[in-house]
Image (tube, rainbow, N blue to C red; front, side, top):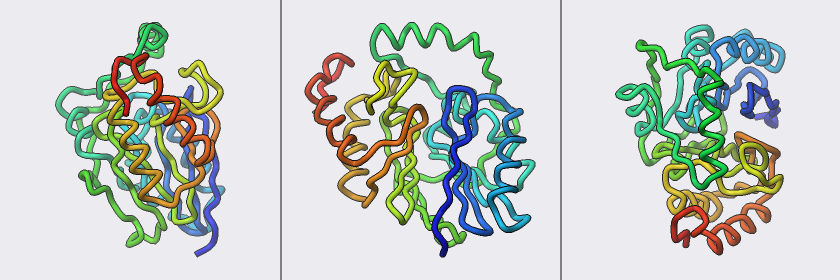
Length: 244
């Protein structure tokens, strides 16, 4: 299979991604607003060699700025949505996945979020490919990727790992707003900071991933990820946990 072409699609504050291999592609996250689906459809049409366009939609986690246009995009393209069962359950039962601030800056950011007027998930929202803690393998769909469950930022947070060593990690880490650091940093908003660090170790030591594409900020290397973990564990109490 030819090398993957990765295109970053900016949707509000969120990095979303189109990953294409000739006739097939996968979308990683879909921004806040439903109208972004047109941008993803156009990008897929330009990047692929086939009218098939989008083969799958992968949601790293269920926060509103990552899932907003997933339903409309799935209906327009026919592509199935992949999401972990924990976040899917929260979306179906409560209409949202809670975002927990870690510290005063995060609480300030959370106060701004209502001004984004994030739409609620449609009542008829359905994800066809709900996976569990074992993740999912998409090679059978002709996509050389695996999904790894990496809880912490949310209960269902997950990462997409390509066979070539690139990984798409959602908000497991940030290297830009809403973080205050331009270096990779652990998220300022999260469900369980200690569990997120454990998930990072799982990703680093159980896969060959060496480049990480976050939901906010720039890509970073394996060395930068390891430095981030060492720093995060050292000052874990700033986020109210013993992150060891």
